[in-house]
Image (cartoon, rainbow, N blue to C red; front, side):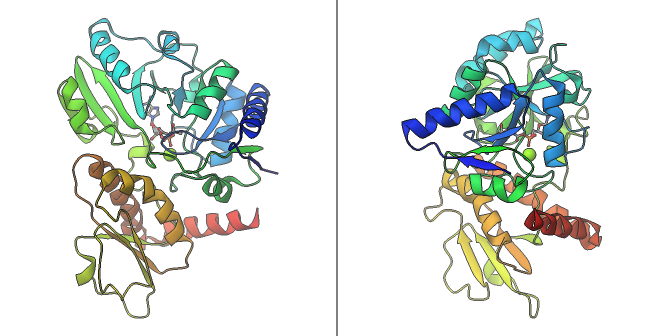
Length: 352
Ligand code: TXA
Ligand code: MG
């Protein structure tokens, strides 16, 4: 059984922290809130505990995990920092940690191979979520934590989403309400003084440019296979297409369509359901709502989700990245294989 512990009152919070630390010490994988999305956390230095993350998520073993550190003093214990990259890394870490910023660095042996999927590098970050920070401090060691969803699916921004994905597979979900940013951390590698942006997130490319030249990961041949970067990630069960103008979209006959809108739209009656990412065109609000609305639309038994493009700059670029991947999964799956895979996962989820 999966238990959900609330954390609204001081008493609830103390209980949740104690229970979480106890389960982590016992080598369990449990769901915890972070400021980006909910994570599925286990003792990063215990390979058996980490294996439980892969099992619960049905995540392929070739997909490495992010290691969350209790505090910056752990950095040099888990990673090797090249001498000439150190000043730049120090500056970025001072600005962005704790926060939604993940660094890829050469790995030290203390990190088990299962965490990094055999790679010579390790991904590290320090979460700014107060409850996550408290739990990891009490636990006292790094936690490996990917997003707490089944592999390839939409990331969870509420405890309810986690339950929908992992019910019966993990012993505990610590509930701290909706997550702040709503999309996963920005992932960056630093090499020879150059910043390589591997995954867009709450820390924008524009912010990173204050620290030096930024190159996009798609231009870096070195990282061909990090699955969060597969073209078909973050897919809802319902087909999703991305359009410039929902008002000129012609719905296929007898298809029930939902709209994930950027602008406030009048007269979009052709859509059975509409979710507007932000009533004030605020990209922060839109990012925080993105996965929640995708989850909601996904549960309405629609035939199609039509997503309106958002401005492709700042945080909007991170939102577009997720939407593009979600739509690519479906463009590729007239190959009905993917569709069947998602459908069968969904029914399995309901059974458990
Ligand atoms: O905001 C976040 O980053 C959330 C919260 C829970 O911290 N975590 C998260 O983890 O999004 P996950 O596993 O869903 O996404 C991490 C991505 C994956 O695409 C993985 O392939 C990539 O990071 N990654 C991890 N280690 C890597 C490495 N050494 N080199 C390249 N990519 C790596
Ligand atoms: Mg993920």
